[in-house]
Length: 166
Length: 370
Image (cartoon, rainbow over all chains, first blue to last red):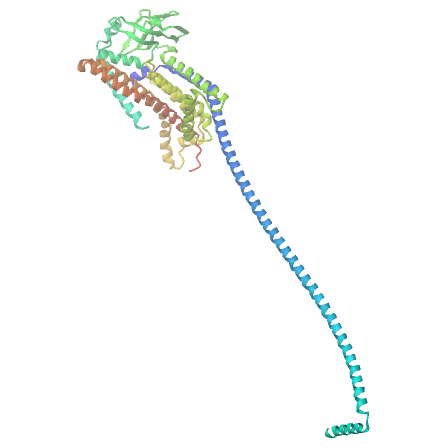
């Protein structure tokens, strides 16, 4: 311990204090501050770059999903349009069919009607014709029946017989 | 690991200290005349006493750089550093005036002598009144650019260059180039592994300059200590104490009300316990920087001591095993310890910074429990 104390040099201690103090101040100004600042700046830069990359990645992912959504929507829309068109077409066809049918039925009905009219006209004409024919025939028969007395008598009898029987 | 390493190395340091004081005691017997003649009777450092002295000398601060000493001629290869003394005025002169402790240096009418890395004021004749190992002469405040101060200045300049370059490279782009690419992870490591988890996300920024400076300061100095330049800065108790005191004052000045509340009036315990706990907590305030001081000092000192002792094995074991075996052994062991010391250099810087931020974190934390 005595050796240790004797070895202790106050002068060296003073010099060391002064040198160390000056060295700390100089190093702080010329080395540590710029170095630490540069390191921090670089670290922040790296962090920012990483964050930006992450953001860009997220943005791309968002865009992608947006695109997918759009695509999906478009597909749905297209499907709807196609379906609509089909329906419209079907409806039109149906309508056309119905129209045609109606039209045809109308035509048919009209035709039937006119046929009916023609028929009844023809029948009434025929009836008329038959009636005049019958009258003519009856006239002729009656003329022949009533051409002689006997024949008149025979007829009267016969008629009388018929009434009796009834 | 965090717990055991300092203890282990401290134990080694302790053993080494005991060992060194023993051997020093045996050497002091002929200290009186040996000191006078020591420098005249140069010679190769080849005895355990001399090796111990050499290691002791290395562990201390010095006023000159000696890369190599020729023991035969007593000539040193290296350079002297400026001496600055505060002793009723400023004395500035070159340490070469001391002639490695052999001569009395004169400055503005005052006389100084170097003894084991310390400067003492003497009369013209340069007589030191010895008391055991240490002279009783007056020690002026020594603000010299010693080896340690030189090492600290060198570290400071290196840090300013390296990290200044890193700071500048951010102006060109977000990714640093060149050396900055190696330094940036270290800065990030201190920020993310040491400061953030211990101090808390909202408050750590204020303390980053201190923590980063201290971390790299200690680490670079530790590494410089492993080079053959012969630095032992962080193994200097004055240096580690200064570092620890910085942490201490930062902790005290940034502490919030709750920190003081926990020290003087511990919440959630009976009043009697509060009274008993207060002095313990106050003591704890001071043991924290003390442990920081001793841990770093002991680890680095022990590392230098062990490494140098292992290198010295080459000489001390020569008689027993022969030159080849002792050199091989020394090389192998010192290489092994060197690798451990590389780890320790980082580990101690890490632990110091870690504990500093832990103490700061304890002082600024906001309790939402209790």
